[in-house]
Image (cartoon, rainbow, N blue to C red):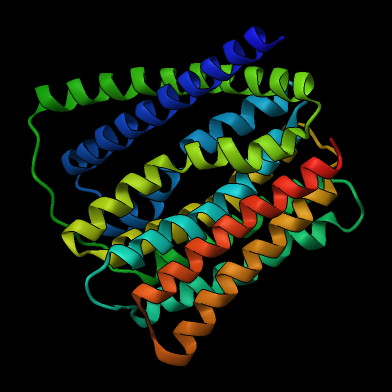
Length: 317
């Protein structure tokens, strides 16, 4: 039993590492191809990068839906949102030398994200996520995307690639996407096996271990942004990734296979989404800047989040 558990855990970690690495390769190649095709700052920063950094969540959502294990993806998507705001944004604030001040556009985006965070809670009230619920989430994403496309600047400068380099990057992109989906399939399969062997909620694994690992692309970008002192790019990416997770990817998950969500785990995660995002919004509205101590508070909230979910799981063990 112990050997089987260690074997499953090894494959889960290996699959998650392959998923994170291949997703980063996708992100890098897409960024270079965008350079070649001359895409805008918006398309790269908020739309393209936020979607590509959510590629692990997307691949897990599709595969878990087809296999009837939607709660793995649900826990992953909601847990990734908590991880993005509490842990990754908290680390950005903690590592920033100066207080992070946000412009009005970023603040408005965060307010919209907080509003959108309430939407799945309403959809959960009847205890079932239906095709109509999935369609609503996709429509909300489309509306938000149109708002962003209509409101943001559309110029950006990249290093140019020649045709040969662009072709090489395109091939790399295709191979990396294939690896993303293969590794995601292993993640879902091993996660289900672990949940069954340990008698724990699939959504718990999704909300903790898988959620942390699928946010590695966001973490990598945030650390680079902190080093280069371009925090607004990282914040825009985190907001975009969270909105992609909670509308587009969750909507696709539900459209493929409507399901009964694990209300107990999901409700706790929603509580922490609103707590962490609400704290950030409160600080921005009251002072328009965030400091190192705010980062410490957010990181503490992430630790509390993990402790609370673990406690619920232990009660049901």
